[in-house]
Image: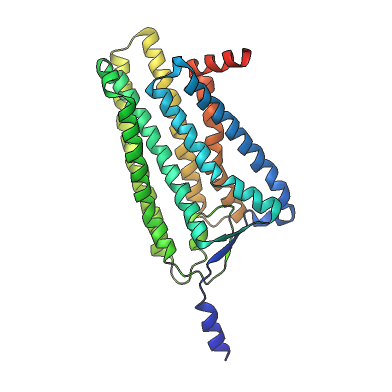
Length: 312
């Protein structure tokens, strides 16, 4: 009788889960809403202000600034897929999520993260044409081309994320329905699966390695060529401006990939779940918080427009 009951229990596959991020501080869960809410407000305000200035200022109507606005829009989309649900869970106890809802959140988060990397690649392309092919810049970098490349990039990201979602949807979750994370991370969800999850975890790891390796390779080639051309052709103020602009983009690239690497390593180490949750929060929220500060401070044209609007 006990054996039959055990087999019946193991055959159950949960289709509804409970998101419980930072389980080590369960006694003070409501207080966690303060940093999440504060960071989210900063992200919305910082990103929306610069997006608005780029859209309304004539001096910022060029492909590079349009791509910055697109990057900030992706920041808002990705964090909005996470933070409001987290706040509802912390403040109202609305922490239940269906398997379908969990997979959709995972798909949207990862697709936006990959799309963000592709936007950085488009920025590298824009700077490459501007510096290495300056006479053809306005003929090549048109709004139509940027729109086409953005759509292709979004479709590509959706296709690359799909294997992770398909594999996760086929898992039987009989171990537990308690996800020890504030969002539906792939590793946190697969930890609840029955049997050997190694092969299924490898799928997500391989996609991440493939995408990261391709993106970093393309970025290295692009910026190596840009810096080589700048050092050999540009002089004086032109060289300084080129290096300053590329340095701004490179600082954003290093920030994004460093946070991604930190999160990926943390989820594969035998460390506290709270620390894993913290690295995940840094990965999804910290770059979106810092991007407006980097571009608002280092890009002179944006800085001037922000100061003028503040004075008005």
